[in-house]
Length: 378
Image (cartoon, rainbow, N blue to C red; front, side, top):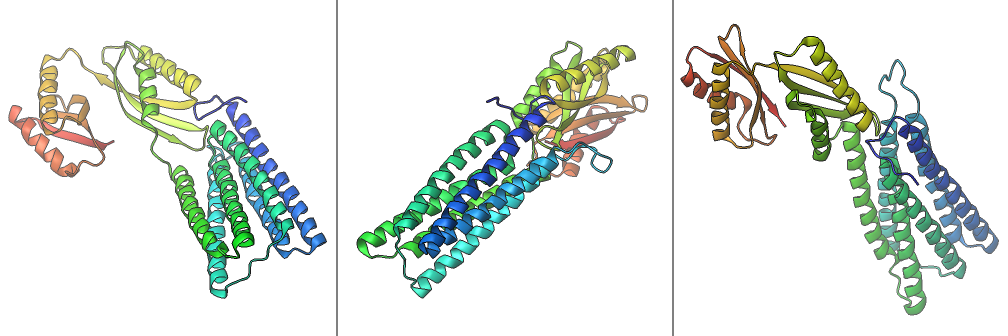
């Protein structure tokens, strides 16, 4: 099976939806078959426990239905109301399944407490054992399928379905172990063991909610993605430097980026336009990212400006070696000096204090200069 990721080409959306639909339909069918099997066995042999397990399997198929709906909507083409497409619906479906997992964990916890308080009698039945073993096998197959598909398409929805299957496996194994221990020793540990399982499922559900929510809110891109983007942009002799890269997504395969590139101010406008176009086209082709570049013309022949650059660089790096400056240029007929300063996000000095500190140092070099600094926190 072909692996795809966020750097895939346009056709990857179709492949992604195909995998997602397969995972969801597989979940619906396998859960329905398991449900029918256990409900029939429960009715034929009068086992309430097996019948309850069958109804539980029926409810598991709801998660798969939610995933299927999410993938179908995410494949809907862009429209007037949603010009960037509908792929974030996949994140929403993952969030819904995660919330359902939390609800199940809370209900399981309540049920476990009631079992302990009421000292419920554990009913042993070989048909219940058979039904549990059958359910474990089904859930293991589901977990393998979901995990394999998640690795290929990196889907929040499929990841949630995979954890749902895993939590079911653990729950069923605990129930099976409790039944065997009860049969051999007459000790009922079902309620206590179920509490541990409920806590495990709850913690996992919280992690899944954070994962899906982070995707919806727009999480920071990976450092390696920014590095790869820089490498493509800088793979041109005319580009002096690149900065202010912004990368954001509207779904797993719909991503946009913007960046500033420094080019020699002597270059012809038509030439720089064509150069920027070629870089944007290459990024789209290789990374499936719609890139927009902003040009910062750089005067490389002004000796006084070059001298100031070296002096500003020394001032900036004396404050912190983690600082980076760019786009340094004169304004208002050389009466003013402007540059952008990129600093770590967690740097404790406020922007205003930092600008004041740097400006005082630069004014000592030339008291007539009007200094303006734009602070960018990474």
